[in-house]
Image (cartoon, rainbow, N blue to C red; front, side, top):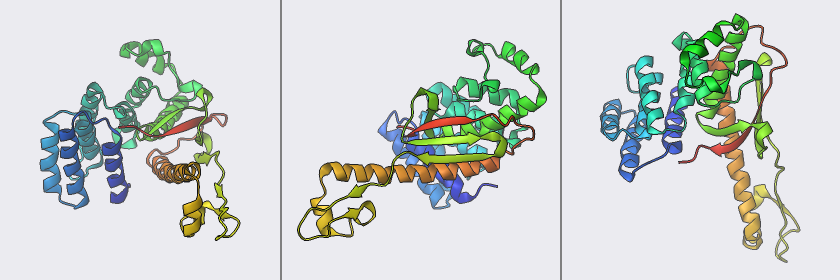
Length: 286
């Protein structure tokens, strides 16, 4: 079962990564999160209703998360799905993936057809065996017929992979690694339930050339030595900040990955050759 701390982090991620059409909508949703963090569910529900009056993508997706997780509201997956669908219509960038993840969850049955339908709508990078002709994106009836021809073991495996990838896509901008690599990547091997987060960047070495300091300093003690921080070039400072941001991104990826593997149980018989390699561009932009 997911912890309260993790659920709070999901709520924070929803608020920080969705588009904010107006400052008023942003402030209203911020009050919902503040109430949740204060464990004041009465205030959280009240402020959520205020935020929903504007029908912004941020508020609709946040309502979906709260109903899905039972955070300050009675858990109701049907209502969560309805809010996510409204968020899709309003332009929330993560709503399609959240729907795919909701329907792939054992708590929803899972609803295998709906999970794969929304994974296609979200353009999730899945193994080739799990992909359906994108020309069926608007034809749910024909899409369902295609799935009936799949072996049960393949269908189960694809729903499992959909849940994992959807959980990642809901919070991060990811793409198939074949479309271009970034400094942070994910190597997911479904058959062994391993999900490795990797960084191609080595640690940053900064050299202090001032006469008052030792000859070298690494990124870890840059700020501990005042003379080094004073002599570091703007380029070095920017590189250090980028390295720190990358490490924070990796920590968040590892946390989300661990929870996703626990949330979506691995079925037996997954093809050992399946491998999902993803490039991570960062958290979803506002």
